[in-house]
Each structure stands twice: as structure tokens, then as C-alpha cells.
Length: 344
Length: 224
Image (cartoon, rainbow over all chains, first blue to last red; front, side):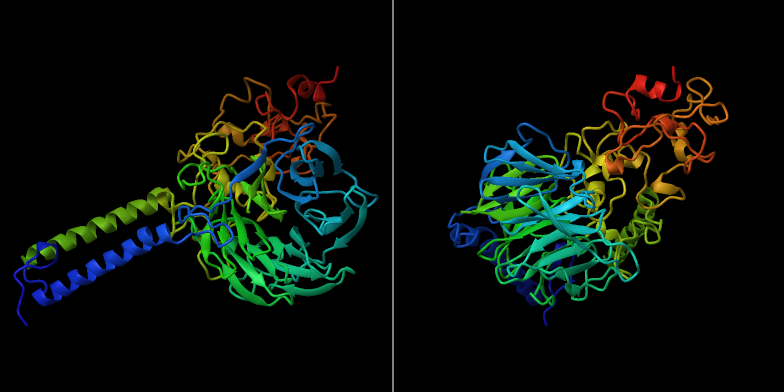
């Protein structure tokens, strides 16, 4: 083999000439491949799913801001955490004031449910709200229970959460309603997810009861969502991922990886799933909502001031709860209020 | 030529060792977070990654992102709030109500943000405070308090003085009241301390972090 008269970085006699040429050829092929991947493909393939059909940056998802309520008319809120929409009404969890605000379609407060709701039930740091269209389900974190009320604020019942395996009182911070009327609840204190029947019995529990990861458990499970098939999506806060469970509570897969760049998760907060199976995850440190395809592919993020520009700053300050209704994604931001994005 | 390359490699390695050592001292990495309440990782895994992101990091110094660059929520606050928001913990959630005054800080400036008083890597003192003092913690910096201003460290009940409203429980929306402390300032008692009248988180808007509007605060103990 001929010894080379030059080598990488100009050092003499370090590499044979043939090997050096092969390395340069490999580098050139690599550069061409990278250019095709990062520059050419996004320009010709519409990212954002077939539903949108809009060509945008590969990192920004085409969901325009339809409406934003920084503060409700005729009232106020302090650090709202979550919201759901039923018909024309929006129910906002006013966590800092331990109450629920009912807003009309114009964003005006038309009713307030809070304080001592009944002889035995009062809201204490409520952290999540869900609906089946007829009732509201509220995760009452400091009085470990799920408060069930009708749309006029009349309390129907309270599902009491059992203590964990170590005797620690539960602390529910996530709730979702299943297609069969059952309810799933996340217990952040005991690192588990509980599935209640409509009658109030615990059908299954996922998680070990202590901090865990992988397919075995969670490290502070938070917000929850349910798809049409009854699969459960769990924000696994400190594992920086979203876990999908089967209707029977078995681990199916996970979304996201730890990081604080687009496509990764740093501090996931809220989760929602639409009819097409797209998974939306709000992240408190990325200050955005990230979108994943049903197969887990990253599709882009929502919440930039200029929808086409990743670097145009966030519309959010501290995005938290997510819900979907009538083709819109409802994002509750603890400081920026309630923002609605069109998914059509 | 080979000798030159070898020497250069040796020099670079030595520089790396020195810089790494300086980094450890400068950033306090020697502290053990694992045994503290911030040791929130799964046993056997890194505790650092919950705040420092070694891969896919978009922010300086491998911190989890700090995208709010201005306004009252800038600096370290988003990182602290990302756990102290009622999800990972309920401790200190009231400290993030932006409508209430917060002790002066310089967002994003090391040692002058939330880390002016707290060190998340662990300290010998409660609440991750960097200095001792309990309910008289303020006196570590505000040294004139005491003989010059309102007396502190006095037993109020022995003097026949007791607040009318002695509860202050921001976790349940109670932001009003004058608290008396034990002699160490670590729990309820009979003594007047800095935190009897002030709250560095959750104070009354428009005051010097008072737990009540000023006139009401005085009259809460000094009844007419």
C-alpha cells in the first residue's frame, strides 16, 4: 500500500492516499444525503398530515390561532390549569381560586362553581377537568377525589382515591373519561394510574406505586387523555414522555424523548388525542404544544407567533391543560389564558 | 512531527483537566442532589437530567430551556415552576402567583435569580436556603433590621401582645395574618421574627412584602 504524502488536517504520513480518498468520498455522499433529508424532502412533502395538506416548515404545525382569552370578561382567574368545551360553553379550571368558571361563547363568565360545593365536597387545588358531554369530572388534588358535577355545577358524587402502597394519600392531577363511562385518574404522589368503573370501583391500576420507568411504571404521572378505542395516554412528567396504555391498562408504547428542542420533551404537561389519532402534548419548558402522528412520528409544534417561523417567539407562557372539541385544540396557559387553535 | 503532535495532545489534555476541575468548583457539581427532595429520579438513574439536558439541549449551559427571556416569568422561574406547579409537588405553588410581589431578582443572572436565596443542589438548611436563619433569614442581608427598626426576636406573648389574625396559609388562599414563631424561627411559637410581618413569596401587592396592608398589619398586634 502506497504511503500518502499528505493526510487529514495536513499532517504528513498519517493516512494512505487510497484510504484518504475513500474517506473524502464517503463524506461527500454523507453531505449530499443530509442535504436531501433536511432541505429537499421537506420542500416537496407536505408535513402536518394529510388532513392539513399545508406545506410549512418541518417543525411548525399548521394550526392557526383561532381565538385567545387572556382574561374572562366579567370576572378573573388566577393560574388556570385546564379547560373543556361543551357546546357553546367553556368550563375553565380556575385553580388559584379553587373554582370552575363557566364562560359563554363570547368569553363572559356566566357561572362560577367553587368553595364548599356540598356538605362534604370543596375544591382544593383542582388540577384537571374532563367531560363526557353531560358532566364534569374534576381532579381535586388536595382532597384526593374526583368530583363529578353536572353542567350547572350540582355535585353528583365524589370518587375517593385509595392511598398508595406506602400509605401515602393519593394526589390526583389528571382525569379522563372513557367511552364506556369509566374514568381514569393519575395519582402523582403514588406514581400510578387508576381505572374506575362507572360504578366507582377500581378496575385496574398501572404503575408500581413508586418511581419507575420503562414498561413498568411512571415517575409522576400527570395529565391523561383517551382515544376513541379506549386507549389511555399518560403524561409521564419526570420521565419526559407520553405513555400509551391499552384499554386494559397494558403498556403499548411511548411518545417523545428527553430534550428541550423541537420533537423532544422537557416537562410535558397536557395531552390530548383527536379523532384522527394525532397526539398533542404541551410542554412547560419548550413553551409549545408538540404534535405526534398516531404512529409516534413527530409532526411539528404549535404556538409560535408567526406560524411559519420557529424562532418567532411563543404565544404561550406556561402551557398546561389540553382538550379537543369541534376541530379545535383548546390550550390552557397558566399565565396567557385560554387559546384555541384550528385543527381543520 | 510526531513529537510535536504528542506534545500538542498532552497540552490539550492538561487544559481539559484544569477546565473540568474549575467547572466542578464553579458550578457546585460536587453536591449530592440525590439525597434531597430534588432527588426525583428513578433509583439508579441520573438525577441531573431533570434540569440539565445533556442531549437535545437548546439552551445555554445544558439547562432545560429558558425561553421566556423577558417579563415577570423570565429567568429561572419557568424551570422551578415546571415542578412547583401542583403537578410534581404542591410545595411553594403560591410563590408563582405573578399578581403578588416577589423579592428583587435579576432573571437569568446566576446567583441573583431564584438562586439568590435557594440552591436547588441541596444545602444544610430547610427549603434549600443557602444561609441559616429560619424566619429571620432576611437578616443575612438586611442587617439593619433589629435594634433600629421594629424589634425582632422578642417574645410577644410575654409582653401581652398577640395578633388578632395569626393564620397565614397561602396554600388555601389565606394571604393575611401575622405569625409568631419559636425562638429558632422554625415553627409556630411566641416570638416576633422577620416573617411575622413579611412574606417574600405571596405578600400583599403594593407593600414591602407585607402579609397585610400596612395599617392593618400594625393594628393586628397593636390594638387601639
